[in-house]
View (cartoon, helix red, strand yellow):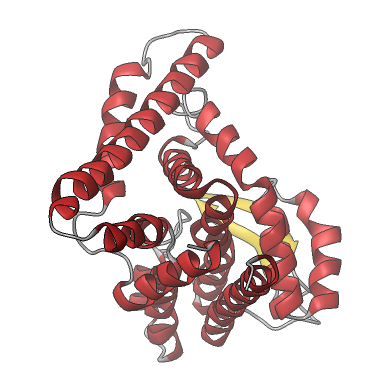
Length: 328
């Protein structure tokens, strides 16, 4: 089966079922990672190098166990359960199409991203700031208790742009490059970065390896996402913002994605945000406040549409590649 067919089926699964509400495999993986972290992350005074090595070991053990569990599970299901009741021809289709699509579906988060964003924009558009703050607190790490309408909209829009790269396009990219192992390793690495990639006392050294590996895995997908945002939005402005603003951002991958995304939307983002009761002055993203649109509930919806248009462009490119390369 072609990559295009598998990706389309995974997107259909995501559209129909969204994120699994119960028994998501990443929850179990998170429990495993937490157990390994509790055993390997030294709370005593050890050298920076020592704890970085412990973190690297924890990373490889977590990803190795996760990959082995995925392979073992599907091998058991295909060999011992479905293999006993399905004809060989049907089993081959399941093996080549359904299983890879199902794994990719579990790794992407298109509909989940849209659902969370609209849970913020809907109350915000109705003036229910309290509900909007509560909803945005589910998707961002900044303090949300004192955010005004623009602050909530800014946080949500930035989250949609950044997570469009992390939760959707990077997963598709690594599936295209390396199949099921590639997308599994990417998603597990991204999960470990989300769990350990903090620069606080507990994780600053232990989480170093997970954070750096995630940076490497996202380097190309982030720039492809930024280019896609530019192509389906305000192209010239997006490319200008990417060129001028991306390098000022603290994350090497979030910078291009968010700068290009803000420019593509013609919305002014970045600026002051509060984390753990401390204000942080972040670089501007997108057009300046006098030329661009202010963050708003409508802007959140526009960011969702930008991600969706970008996804359709990726599917179109894959479709063209499929028909060009597959013999008639």
